Image 1 (cartoon, rainbow, N blue to C red):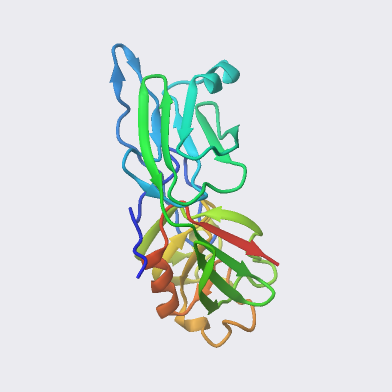
Image 2 (tube, rainbow, N blue to C red):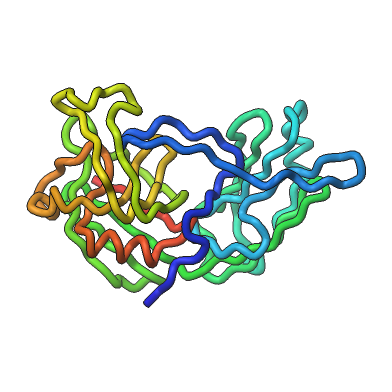
Length: 253
């Protein structure tokens, strides 16, 4: 069985989490930055020794506002064992992100150096999940071979699951999802407070892949969730056990 690595770790360093559409909220955390002389080195993600998915970006979190972004970008050196084209983007005035144009090749080793900080991480197997909102299927490939096709239910009208590519951010063995965290009272017609197992977060806005035994009858046939990707408990556990931070979930119509 393909085992997940570094379960529950965050791939964005110190990025504030938004209120969760599926009813939870969380904040990123990071170890204190290293000190180089009198200069605080930026925090880097992925951390040294981490094994991540093929969609994981490199994130450089500076300790103060960056007045010259172009200069900061020139000071970041990213050296993959296999050449990979990519682009810089800024999350905020302190946080620089570099993402490959497509995905990292599987098993690429990457060294990142920036203003006195250094990280060496490894890209693992290429696990890619595709959630099709029309066919209601959740298909998982590892190294270009389909290994699982699971019936799924996604966001119903008015709560559609967003389309796009979303790297796995973090995972929870179980949690409470509460609609009041994003402004819908529990006693509202669309309100809920649910105990959920095997929850894999794919957006800071609160979209998860998770077990939803209450929607098994709809999985594979119709979309009935509030935006999350619903799987059976068995299938959600499989994804939880095999996915790792940075694995892409591609939502298509």
